[in-house]
Image 1 (tube, rainbow, N blue to C red):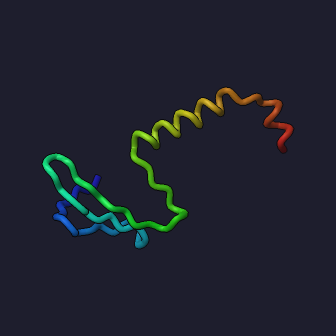
Image 2: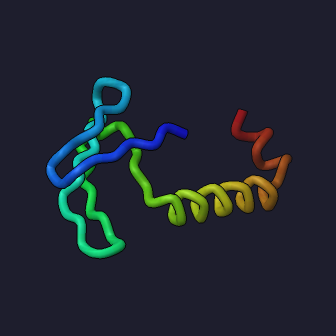
Image 3: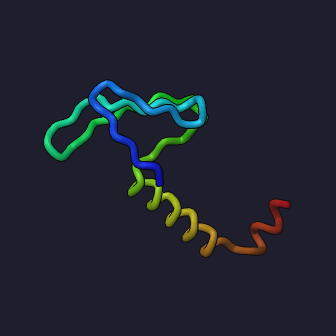
Length: 71
Protein backbone atom coordinates (compact mmCIF):
# COMPACT_ATOMS: atom_id res chain seq x y z
CA UNK A 1 0.00 0.00 0.00
CA UNK A 2 1.24 3.46 -0.85
CA UNK A 3 0.50 6.02 1.87
CA UNK A 4 0.56 9.70 0.86
CA UNK A 5 -0.05 12.92 2.72
CA UNK A 6 -2.21 15.49 0.93
CA UNK A 7 -3.70 18.83 1.94
CA UNK A 8 -6.98 20.40 0.85
CA UNK A 9 -7.11 20.96 -2.94
CA UNK A 10 -4.11 18.70 -3.56
CA UNK A 11 -4.51 15.68 -5.82
CA UNK A 12 -3.16 12.26 -6.68
CA UNK A 13 -3.09 10.86 -10.23
CA UNK A 14 -3.56 7.12 -10.77
CA UNK A 15 -2.80 5.37 -14.05
CA UNK A 16 -2.61 8.66 -16.01
CA UNK A 17 -6.40 8.97 -16.21
CA UNK A 18 -7.80 8.99 -12.66
CA UNK A 19 -7.39 12.05 -10.46
CA UNK A 20 -8.27 11.99 -6.76
CA UNK A 21 -8.55 15.41 -5.11
CA UNK A 22 -8.93 16.25 -1.43
CA UNK A 23 -11.96 18.57 -1.34
CA UNK A 24 -12.51 19.07 2.37
CA UNK A 25 -11.13 17.98 5.74
CA UNK A 26 -13.47 18.25 8.71
CA UNK A 27 -12.44 16.55 11.95
CA UNK A 28 -11.94 12.86 11.20
CA UNK A 29 -13.73 13.04 7.82
CA UNK A 30 -12.09 13.67 4.47
CA UNK A 31 -14.18 14.51 1.39
CA UNK A 32 -12.57 13.43 -1.86
CA UNK A 33 -13.42 14.00 -5.50
CA UNK A 34 -12.60 11.47 -8.20
CA UNK A 35 -12.28 12.39 -11.87
CA UNK A 36 -12.10 9.32 -14.11
CA UNK A 37 -13.28 8.17 -17.53
CA UNK A 38 -16.89 6.95 -17.58
CA UNK A 39 -15.75 3.39 -18.33
CA UNK A 40 -13.83 3.22 -15.03
CA UNK A 41 -16.16 1.92 -12.32
CA UNK A 42 -15.79 3.61 -8.92
CA UNK A 43 -17.44 2.16 -5.82
CA UNK A 44 -17.19 2.64 -2.08
CA UNK A 45 -15.53 -0.50 -0.76
CA UNK A 46 -18.59 -1.69 1.21
CA UNK A 47 -20.73 -1.45 -1.95
CA UNK A 48 -18.05 -3.21 -4.02
CA UNK A 49 -18.01 -6.09 -1.52
CA UNK A 50 -21.82 -6.36 -1.65
CA UNK A 51 -21.68 -6.56 -5.46
CA UNK A 52 -19.02 -9.28 -5.26
CA UNK A 53 -21.13 -11.30 -2.80
CA UNK A 54 -24.24 -10.92 -4.97
CA UNK A 55 -22.30 -12.07 -8.04
CA UNK A 56 -20.93 -15.06 -6.14
CA UNK A 57 -24.42 -16.00 -4.91
CA UNK A 58 -25.80 -15.72 -8.46
CA UNK A 59 -23.12 -18.04 -9.82
CA UNK A 60 -23.72 -20.58 -7.06
CA UNK A 61 -27.49 -20.49 -7.66
CA UNK A 62 -27.21 -20.74 -11.45
CA UNK A 63 -28.55 -23.81 -13.23
CA UNK A 64 -25.63 -25.42 -15.15
CA UNK A 65 -28.00 -26.79 -17.83
CA UNK A 66 -29.50 -23.35 -18.47
CA UNK A 67 -26.01 -21.90 -18.82
CA UNK A 68 -25.04 -24.62 -21.34
CA UNK A 69 -28.08 -23.68 -23.48
CA UNK A 70 -26.71 -20.15 -23.79
CA UNK A 71 -23.70 -21.48 -25.66
